[in-house]
Image (cartoon, rainbow, N blue to C red; front, side, top):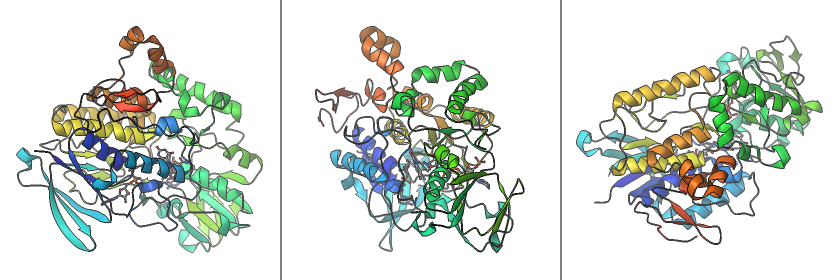
Amino acid sequence: MTRRVAVVGGGSSGLACIKCCLDEGLEPVCFESSDDIGGLWRFKENPEPDRASIYHSVIINTSKEMMCFSDFPIPAHFPNFMHNTLIMDYFRMYADHFQLTKHIRFNTKVLLVKQRSDFSHSGQWDVEIEKDGKKEKHIFDAVMICIGHHCHPNLPLHDFPGIETFTGKYFHSRDYKTPEEWRDKKAVVIGIGNSGGDIAVELSRVTKQLYLSTRRGAWILNRVGDNGVPLDLLFNRVVNCMETVLPFSVFCGLGESRLNQRFDHGLYNLKPKHRLFSQHPTVNDELPNRILSGTVQVKPNIRRFQGSSVEFDDGSVVEDVDLVVFATGYRFSFPFLASHVVSVSENKASLYKYVFPPELDRPTLAIIGLVQPLGAIMPISEMQARWATRVFKGCVKLPSVAAMQKDIQCKNETMAKRYVTSQRHTIQVDYISYMDEIAKLVGVQPNIPRMLLTDPRLGLNVVFGPCTPYQYRLRGPGKVGWGPSGHPHSVGESGSAHADQAL
Ligand SMILES: Cc1cc2nc3c(=O)[nH]c(=O)nc-3n(C[C@H](O)[C@H](O)[C@H](O)COP(=O)(O)OP(=O)(O)OC[C@H]3O[C@@H](n4cnc5c(N)ncnc54)[C@H](O)[C@@H]3O)c2cc1C
Ligand SMILES: NC(=O)c1ccc[n+]([C@@H]2O[C@H](COP(=O)([O-])OP(=O)(O)OC[C@H]3O[C@@H](n4cnc5c(N)ncnc54)[C@H](OP(=O)(O)O)[C@@H]3O)[C@@H](O)[C@H]2O)c1
């Protein structure tokens, strides 16, 4: 009998899950609480509760060859770094091509995902949903949770004494849409993650003055790398290997000196105490320009608010502030799951390779997309989905509970050692290392020594070229052949529903 899989969420992770279920001969039913696909990438004028919300100008900071699904390249005429509208176009093409939308039940919210009483031998789940105010219960053999982790704002008002006296307007970055309203006003942006950087740059084009407040500074990377090539294309297997071989401080030092050649982070008030790879990267090509032109002034942390004035840790005070944007990140949770299944505390969840709760009797629940990669999330979600669906089918086994817990602990320790302690550094992964780790479990990691012998040109490209998601379609289940037009067609070992279907 075909096993039914509930996919919760129809964003990019949910779409990849539906596709992988179909490839493995499973029957997906996706529940999406909104009326469309795309999740975070679908811009809405008004933020909606419990759903991600982006500003109008968001351009992705991962390049198209590095962010696409592994068997569906982004059209050649799309730019390297796409505006959110083009990303939506791509997701629609993916959904149309693989006929994914017919498996989605829109305007349907998942309220509860609960183990059935016979779970220890059936592995089944009761899924309670709500549509048009009516509740229904369904039984599923497995569940994939793809609800994203940029929905619930982290608004740490308690860290900002006097905020209750502030006479201007303040809101979280998820509520920021466009800069127009703030023309000729004074604004402060708190936080130097990618939201803080983007919003500070955009606001500074219209404001009288923009202050960017950061409690520890940041190393600023660019989208545009050497010779005008997208920077993420340069992080190949050789660089990844250097990272594992060289001492951490040497590897960081090499990167930092390159970044300082572009602009000295000390001179720009941005130099952090921590090392380059100890913080989630902030990518911003324009920030140094804005700082150099004085439209953005970098400030330390805020000491206190008083009326319309803001005092910073260095004692400087800015009067008549009209707007404060808290670009202070996000919190995630799984409100429809019992805490004994997955518990989250301060953005920490105990999951085997960030996917499987280790202590379930049966491995029939997977969390997909709960990672913050140095790289793009989409191919990672896809790889996780390929793994999870193989596990659901019984083709791939999970190790013992003790082994999974040891792996979780080891990952936590490595992360704590490398990263600055912060709520934003709890699910960090390096793109190549993590992709390889999961690919090995699925049986799709490129066999480089063999490739160098049988097809040296391809082998050299895999080693020295960009580590694109296509590298994980060269062998094993879900292998695709590349047609004369450069388009993939499936020749995989699994029961692909799309076998031999040329694009
Ligand atoms: C401003 C911004 C820029 C970003 N830029 C990049 C980038 O450059 N590169 C990158 O890789 N990542 C980026 N990200 C990360 C981003 O989260 C991922 O790119 C991606 O959107 C994650 O997709 P997802 O499907 O996992 O989650 P989402 O896109 O958040 O989709 C989750 C879906 O689940 C649905 N849902 C939630 N709860 C329920 C429920 N109970 N029942 C039914 N449906 C539910 C929601 O309606 C939504 O459609 C960015 C994040 C932000 C905030
Ligand atoms: N263009 C793009 O592609 C784009 C744009 C926006 C976001 N994104 C992605 O979206 C995700 C979320 O990014 P984000 O920038 O919204 O959040 P984030 O990466 O979590 O950054 C939050 C920032 O707020 C600071 N902060 C948090 N709490 C604070 C406090 N109490 N006091 C002072 N500062 C505080 C953090 O400082 P500490 O480091 O000190 O904790 C950090 O600088 C990331 O994966 C990011 O890459 C991508």
